[in-house]
Length: 56
Image (cartoon, rainbow, N blue to C red; front, side, top):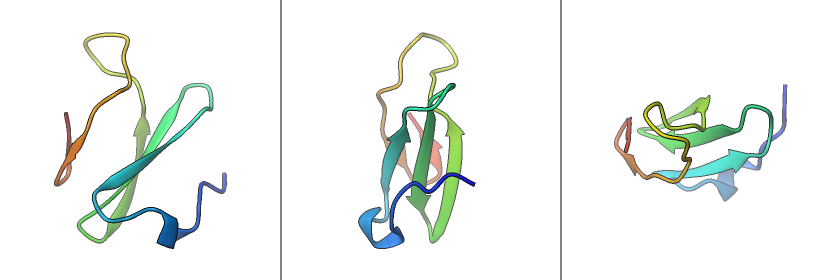
């Protein structure tokens, strides 16, 4: 387990990026937490935004 942040420090609809290898993004949306590989599937980028449960 890797501590990321206090739950109160991650508002609904926001994310935090971990500088791990590979980088991981943790999202809080719709009352749940999700962790994904923070690398775009079609280009080498990691900036994006959250729309509900979709990452753009």
